[in-house]
Image (cartoon, rainbow, N blue to C red; front, top):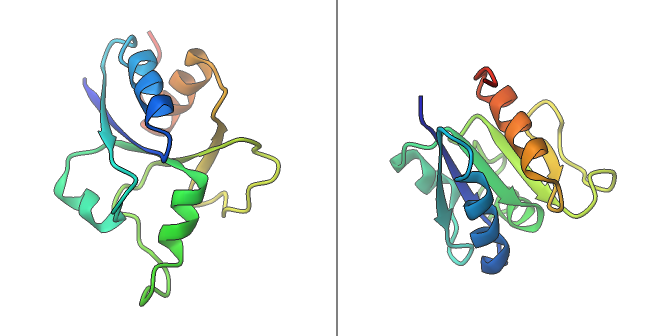
Length: 119
């Protein structure tokens, strides 16, 4: 089973590194989304199983003009943060992971959220 993961972050070097790391995991396919003009509603047009999104980008989208509460079309979202202890997101909606986490931690979290068994 292939898991499609989208990554949206302001730092394109970080995005490319994360893509390279995650694509080493069998069954992972990674799509990079541009931070400029990022609109979560556009995600409904793509087949994405998991969204990894920068904390600032996530916060910006939550407060878009005309939006009372943003409904993320991707049910499984992990917010990329520098410090998980300082992030103020509702834990029932999304999870957070440190940007400096290793491949194993990213893999385990993605597998858990997509309910795929680690082999």
